[in-house]
Image 1 (cartoon, rainbow, N blue to C red):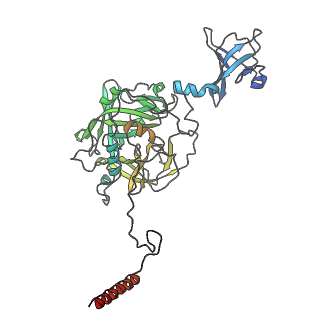
Image 2: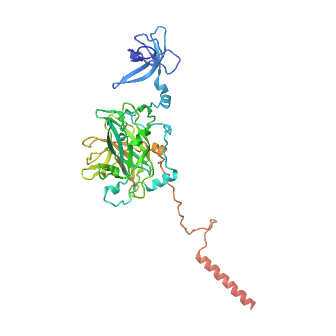
Image 3: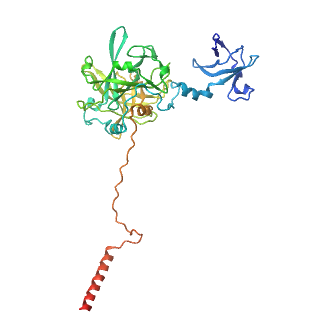
Length: 439
């Protein structure tokens, strides 16, 4: 199938696919595809399309045609795909393959730069993160001090304003991470058309480059982070909160896919203040691909009919994803108990600390299918934009034990105690003999 656009009407024409290939080209130029056409196309730059799984993919562009117009040469896209990726951000599809994005850091420059952690702050964060102030407590509210709440105001119809509350996770004293659907979401029946939650306008995913996109600053005025869960879901504004200063999206960038990713938020002012000692950041897991593991915990907010939003901790374990949609940053997991919430943090306990490995994104009504966005895959981005990086462990100098040597420093045998005693007796006898002679 060929589509021609060059000051001419769009033309669709069939091509004898059996004669397409390098071997049919009688040319000294390498990386050229030739095709015999059923009709005459007297133009260049037309796309050679391949249809697969109900999708059209451009594989080459026409470059030259003979005067008799029975043969067309095409330049393969594969020859220049690396350069196209670098210049446009149109890279390998994330919806059909599992891979780690190969992007240059920083992937994009932000208009509103984040206040990154300094190296000293990063080291301090690594020391204090992931440890509840009272680890022996039986209260889930005290064992999950990093679970906070994001409130977004939206006005989908007219002037009617509603509020959407989403479970979020504190990852430093001024940075929070949340599932992308808190600000970028689809609608029932059309989840792949991403829209901004505050005003219901369509998201221009072409601005997403190398798996990164800056969130418009005008939406920050409608976004708050509450540093403690709401006791009354109808009176949450009484809690201590911080306005959001900047936000950036990490995840899938395709225009025909849901925004499967997370949003990094920076708040105005450090948290927690002294009045909230039980608000502690979680540690971030180091970069690696998702793995199968058990003994995980899902920390999130659930709605209690009597008290409102409360912190909740439930067991979980990762499993192999068996569906056809393979996002590069996807984790699949199961839960023995079904709680109707999402966006919580998937945690692993490691060396006495809790580490965030994923953010829950979706669960089926029966909770048998649960998806999370991998924080481990995106670890580099948190280091680049927030300064939350891996801290090199400093080895303590080993204390040398004093050991009595069996040999002298010059390699000779060390004199024993009996030898010293024998030498002393001889000297004493020599002195006595000398005194006797003198007397």
